[in-house]
Length: 115
Length: 115
Image (cartoon, rainbow over all chains, first blue to last red; front, side):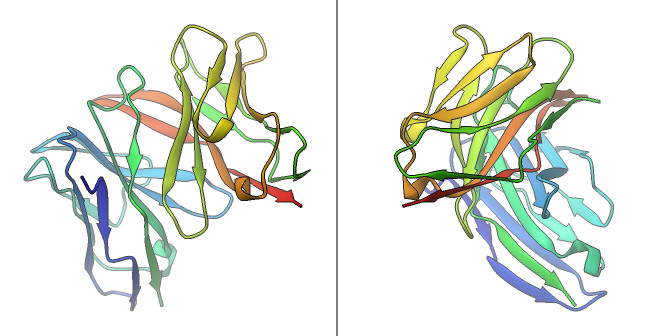
């Protein structure tokens, strides 16, 4: 049981490049989400999914795209990287989106720098 | 807006002394509250949660938190701090969305425990 696995852990991009952050979980969780962490701002929700084929926007979705073709995987795509997207990205998962306080489990993070 | 506030950017405490990391919340309805800890270059680890029931919640690593509805607070506490407790702590509250729920995080509090 690996939990929530994110790749890559570190990445440097040039402005305008595109890339995909991978996230996989082996806990059969329906709910998966992506957060970004910036100093002094805590974690902010980018996109989330409540099951395969269902995604929706969070607080800061602009510049990011997601899809959920399987229960296990929830990739985050940066369409055209900008310096403002320099951040630490966390993927998370849980059963059914915390309806009764289900614990959300986080991956180890992906450090992205856009130059 | 539904939110959480962590009024202290940093808390310093001597090893062996009790520690408190403060959190206040603003939500409609009954709050579901969480504490997470983040060690350097790592993901977030779940510490404890309050859903309902006893106002004093016990969690991992000897931490506990006290829910106070009248003061809308959920402070994290530990009777005797360890140097290894030094980390970044996040308070979070569950917020309902169109397709499920999400966590809204505070900005985080750095805890430094000195020997």
